[in-house]
Length: 68
Image (cartoon, helix red, strand yellow):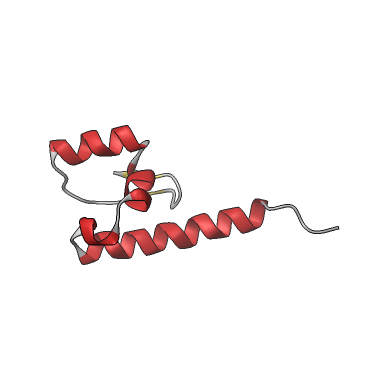
């Protein structure tokens, strides 16, 4: 699966149901970020969520306008 925020391929096995959920959410990144921690049910997914949050925060801070 490709992560747009991390700009890298994330090797993982997913079910057809998970693929449909990711498609509905708008991709891997949005699916992981929107899913509650207790629903992710794996250490790998929780670590990926933390990486995605950090990447999103870095992008948001880099694109935020500076104060006058």
